[in-house]
Image (cartoon, rainbow, N blue to C red; front, side, top):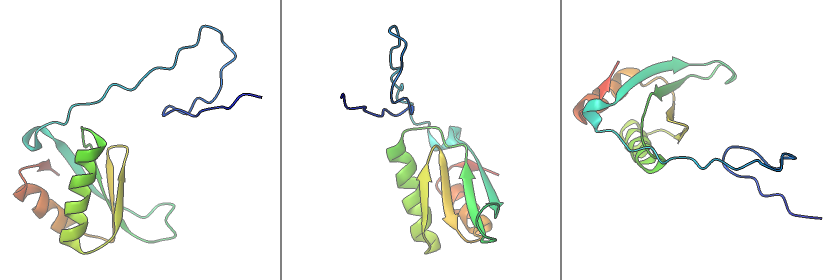
Length: 108
């Protein structure tokens, strides 16, 4: 029995003999002035708890994690970053907008 290795796009096994795994092309991180970020409040599917979402980040995961770390430290709360989205626990929309503008990001 062979081992199935799951890759980043979720495909574990294919019966197609011509199937080729597509490698993700690393996205280049845009400059902060060229980023177009949206700051939203969300409480859907979170048991009524509020979280602040920062969406629209274009770049690699390392830069996204750095920005998330900065926002979490400045707000003094927890959160996470993945798939071009930063989740900050609580309603910190105004504070996050201020921080992003100080760091020269375009944000609404």
